[in-house]
Length: 308
Image 1 (tube, helix red, strand yellow):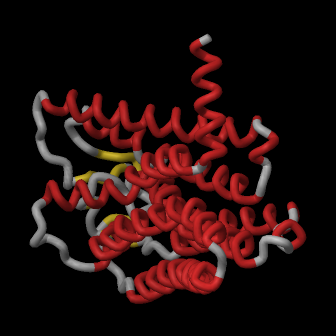
Image 2 (cartoon, rainbow, N blue to C red):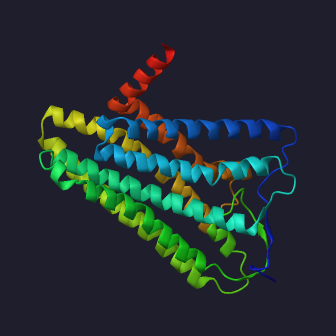
Image 3 (cartoon, rainbow, N blue to C red):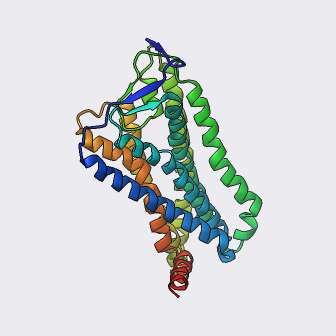
């Protein structure tokens, strides 16, 4: 039994000995990280610089892209170090920092997507009242809540991580909260209960808002004109794709944390666990950059100007 306040390092046991292939993995991960940074920073800059994009929908998109940078920065530098390491150990403070970033990233992502669905609901169902309902103050409040609520909830959850630990080995390629809780010697019922409540309350609130918004949008589409349906398809398709992509990755990660998934091959478990944190930062800028006509046209013009 060791006291977590005295634990200097945690050892990550899910890594496999890849030999010379480690340099290939390092190159691939580094390329993906650079791609994530460039694509998300580019779209944030495009939205911030162009006044024509200073609309509620693009402000929420900007918040989403900032979260992709936040989440990926909590994982990729860590992976790059671990891939070339032989011990696969992480200092306790860095492990706890990663736990905070990973969990708050997931919650912020879900709430951001929920806020964006509410924005689409107002734009499609109440187009004439949209500007009066979605005021700058309301936009700032929704973005603030989608960031502050997860930070408070995750901070409180981390305060419930048991102090007394029996082991310091984590069977994953990165640190997460439930893996730390499972190392405890003491009873973890309260930690588990609060963790489940925090996870499913965030998911429930987000999904409730998303479902309500899209039920209303579908009702308007079926009763509205062809132009209304076309507008809904153009603006909602990338959002729905993003929700489905993140929900699938998040569902597996929650299941793997809470249930025994040892029947799956180790490589598959590693891939699916990393999918939760890598697919969304790559998927969102690509999807929104290609699908949203205003962003696509501005990016095209920037490329053309750069060539000349």
